Length: 463
Length: 72
Image (tube, rainbow over all chains, first blue to last red):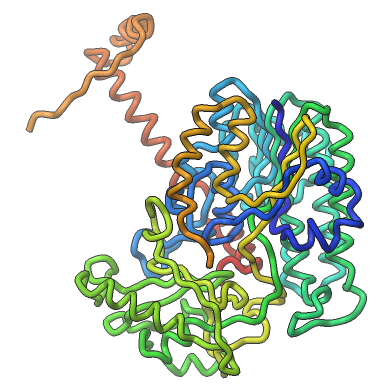
């Protein structure tokens, strides 16, 4: 059976299935004939690694991918950026390619640099720019440029020129769908997957104009931008459906959901206040500074953190870090103590937070690669972590590095429309997706194997 | 110290093709030839893994990811 997968980065069940559905006739028609429901993301619920968890059926630990950046071995400062060559596990297209089935992939993160696939590939938003080779085969790039002109991989949303941003996102998305329609009509394929990143950018940039519960809610002309973007997606999806034959399975998925951001918490500043980190140039903390500007006294530092939608905490371990001080025998007790301290962080007005702390080796069957010692969801992701410092308060009402109104949530969406009519509600985990598709495409053995292993992958629940 | 070896199988026709090339390539045995080629292939794969972005590209990507809030 042919499968067409539409990836809408960060689409939450609340908006796609409920709030906007009456205004999305094409998506509604698909859902009416689909099994659909929320899809629980991986931990961390971040674009990289989530799309690859979905495509491989493996956890971030098995992939050795915990986000966009990783530190090089145990360095304090050197990092590497995630890219396609770091994916060592087989994805849906690798399995089916071996059976001679063809795939077309557009924008699945991370697929830059473009790797060989039995079919065609246009890389994702990790691509530096359109001057590099971003397709497989490389000759496909010329065709893309004929169809769409200068192809757009991403937009930068954290800026104040909102009108310009709207224009850029619309332009990017319309071009992408043009390319998608071209490929689906002109090329041979059995499996087609695209990821549209524009939705995530629109959510982050316009959430406070849309969500009345947002602490910075602003009424005004941007109120309907998010809604209008969903309508754009619906229109484009409608055009695609018209081009698909009735025997093609159609799936709509997202890598995680989205919800309002309550603020950003200056986690490194907190670590200093609590005595876990010592700096030799404290005067720098009188105004905004980045972690890299600190002169950290590693001989007296227990832990430091990275910010982002979730926070990664690293311990300064003897024999592992260059100037490590925590003895291996004390590692567990120090980590547990810090975990308790983080879990006891309260809101600015003393309100209780639902903070979650995960140890990588506890939540995956195996934790490969450059993993952090702890992964932290401050108030269950409602609060971003700011790695930057120099604030009067640890509680920042706005993001530390440019406007951003939304954070991630744990449930994305899943729907599957099969040629034979069936419909209903379900709830699945992101790890169920690959075995489901492999099964549909006739790779039963591979599907059974992945599904069997899923008992281990789905052990950890959010609550 | 003597090296440890393992046996792998390759198709006979491939073996014969390699044999024909030995002299021109300056190898004494097929095993030497195959070992050399495989080492080359593997090291080029490793290089590929390490140097995906040029310095300039990496800065560009980091800058964008920072602006998107992934590197705060």
